[in-house]
Image (cartoon, rainbow, N blue to C red; front, top):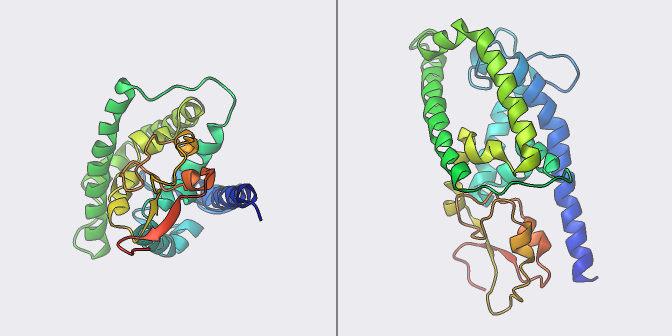
Length: 255
């Protein structure tokens, strides 16, 4: 069995995993369940920021039921493989990958775009504050008030803002890769730390590497360091290695 055949099969497996995630988690995250009606999720949640106050939601959707299991899977996969959820399982990231395949001239993230990364830290601070209030509500230490109350007051305007942000993100994905993951998503900022401490890592022995740059060409995040916080662990570099010298290894294990 040739190396090229194995590479093609592995790429097919990665595509299958991404497609399954998009078809299953995508509708559930956007609509609250798999179907055409809107029962929750991003566009139907009674709260302006979805997926956080599921424990007190008056109309629980399918996503709220699988949420503990999903978060458990994300935690375990992050400890084992780092940001592999971002690279293979996040429906927003997968959809961005597919949209980026549209044959049109692409835009390289230049310095002006790189400054937008600061947006991630702003959304992260907001996200963590909302989480802290949600925890207090969960344990009955406070009613739904504070920032949540303010968000509910301006619900209609914020829904329009969410739709506009989604539309801009999808259109932008055609021209440059994963704008949501790069510049907005607070979860990507949290998961980025897991790359440094994950159990598995990717090694490319320099003496065996033919410097064909196939891994460089396949890296959509422009990060050849597998332990870099920017690496989304999509395994495209592993699947594209023409020499087959890239190896997944347990960190600290020799041989």
